View 1: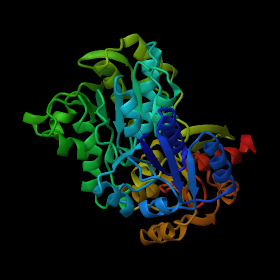
View 2 (view 1 turned 180 degrees about the horizontal axis):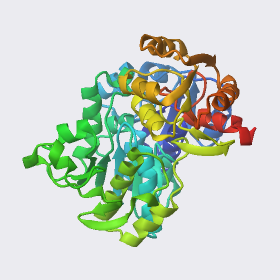
View 3 (view 1 turned 30 degrees about the horizontal axis):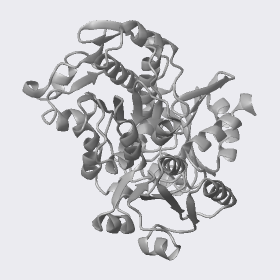
Amino acid sequence: MPTAHIIGLGRSGITAARLLNKDKWQVSVSDAGQSEKLSDLKQKLESEGITVALGARFDLEVLAAAGMSRPDRIVVSPGVSWQLPSLVAAREQGIEAMGEMELAWRYLKHRPWVGITGTNGKTTTTAITAAIFQAAGLQAPACGNIGNSASELALSGKTPDWVIAEVSSYQSESSSTLAPNIGVWTTLSPDHLERHGTLERYGEIKALLLHRSQQRVLNGDDDYLRNGLMARWPNASWTSTQGSQAVVAQGKPQQSPIPMAYLESGWVMVEGQQMLPTKALRMRGTHNQQNLLMAVAVAHLAGIERDAIATAIQNFPGVPHRLEHICTWQGIDFINDSKATNYEAAQTGLAAVEGPAILIAGGEAKDGDDTDWLRTIQSKAATVLLIGRAAPNFAQRLETLGYIDYEIVDTMENALPRAIKLARELQARTVLLSPACASFDQYQNFERRGDHFRQLCPTNA
């Protein structure tokens, strides 16, 4: 019986373990954490025949000491670094290692895939794409970083018409053969540099997915993608919110095709044909119009008819935690943008809402360039309320620019009552949670942070 070891007991690790166990592998799992919840999970998994070691960091010698067999295969959860020394050592010893997304691909590669990657916009683009495919009557579940893990889809035993996968840099890095029929790259800006080191390395990891894709859709409004990749992929399909000539004008004409999907005169255009009015998309911001264009381009490449595309867009409600409108109270909009976990996403979110805004920001800061974000704060924010570990550093950055309309309030419980009071005093139009930070200093994930904001909003108090 072949043996497999799973690193990490998160959602994807659990489903990867169950998927292999179902396929008659001898499966063990290790997780560095220890808690009552993990202990309950350990008991459940071991009742299914899966060995679990808690409080144990992955190491082949540690596994052997715990009585676990040397694995034939190692599967890594997205939160585990691909460069973990013990994992690198295992690969050097010839043990097959892969990410959970790659594992799912091995079971579902007989079905067509759309793989969507990028720094920002990939969740919204994935959600819109899945909605369009489903409006066309296709079984096309979204998976990966959105909804279920890819392994859950494989474990379900259902045969989808298409797999619509959001693929993070972590998942791309640990997937050696994942080759979508259509690959999408939304944006590239500094993010996860604490793990990947440089923007160049981060970009190359993203590019792995596109290299293996049969067809490619790229955001022609993104400087990095437009200027760095047109020559590499001359046959790619480009999108632009700036009209049919925008990509040509900003790139090198001999290498710059007219975009496949673009906005012109209030219409979404695909290869010169009117598809649907831009106002059909109810989500805020030019960036969401770009996300729409990429999803429409994918649908067009997949052969989906115009009516299904238009129906899906008109009924699309938006994505939770990404410029999600929670309520309007006394003329003030409360917007949950908890998924804005880096400076570019937070700048985009603040630019998209109606000002002046009371901005709630902070958490666990990431490396990156905050210049545009700070400039938008200066022009759009009436006050900034700072929470979490990054608050003192953010305060210092704001003061350096001469912006003094901020308060350190530490927690969400303090931020909402203060935001409500200031919004009324300053006649602000919006209270916006757009943190520019990861959530892990105070919350398990950005979803929990956004849910907490929602619970504290006035109509939900």
